Length: 263
Length: 263
Image 1 (cartoon, rainbow over the protein chains, first blue to last red):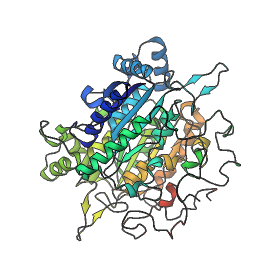
Image 2: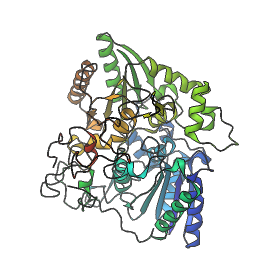
Image 3: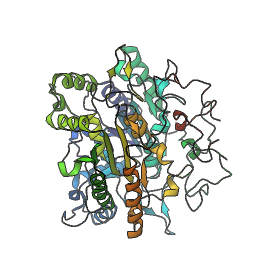
């Protein structure tokens, strides 16, 4: 596979940096081709602005429309186009970051903000004019693996842990971004206790990462419900007969009882 | 009250910009004092780096430790200290942004990343050495109101909507950041269909915002469970007798059956 490894950490000498280096070596050893977007090393600009789109700042900026027009016209800023070329080349994305405030560092959020533009990643229609998303979209056919290192203890990020279950906390990325644009989203690797990682913990994390990378071509994606599959009504609400009476983010999985202890 | 209005939108001539202007006027009319952090207008740098902490980039950067040391020594970068001074002055924060990929624009995520440092916003201990968070912390005593404008239809952001319930999608901000640092977090105002807002919709949004602002001093916060209140065990897991058998982010509310249709 062609793998684009997107990495956001200000310090290469971190646990995250070590995992990135180890992971890239593992992939190469398995015969995959790897390209990198090391956002800090690249000095990536994460702030969406009119310059991204060749937009006259004196005119009102409507980001979706301006980005779609610029994408179609080839007018997007060169740094954005370069990332889109890498994504187009890739069969799989690894998105790796330290969990900051239960989300991505700003530099990485801004990679999605500026690169995943309308017409490229979303807002793509099928032959019948239907907008493709949630299981279809501009990036369909690609696999995505999120790898995050968290200071939080693993139990705190479990199904009833105080921080919220990791897959719920990561829902905006896993479901709202990667699945939204059509990718097959693998269960994330969440490495807890990262601030206090002893060498044995770092080894365990590296081993876990290797296992995920070996399985990258074949692992079962999170079975999110597709939008076009008929599970949602015209108001985009899950039909009453599915996960009846239940709420919570896991209802958007086709196997909502999967979580330990789920009612 | 002293209100700090944190606003992140690249275009002041947007629905969000109009709401911000209207909201500031409403607060002033009610006798509150308002200060602004208009992040795009300020050219806010959202990328955490060694320069934030007076840290020698040749040394390994451990962000938590470096930021705590710099905060204690008064060595934080001036732009960060200026924001902390505004927060210290404020009795309430309004955090307003367009929902991009079901989260904050990168420029705003980076305001939290760089400003909410260890020792200031979190990692604060009580007299007995216990770390204060989730209902206590460096920012306790302040109220927080999130206002977000979303292109998505409101039904899609409801309890069984395809995008996930808005309060679940916003959990990393509402619970993981604002409540984590000790603030009283008011229910967010989510303005859906923002891309297609007709004048009547904009008026309705402004009216809804006015109501929230009038109630700012008195509205009931989201009743998240405090960490020190005894609901979580030593592994940070919700005790079995509370919300028994249930999972999902609403278990972290003291009223987990609040959501329509909750099992």
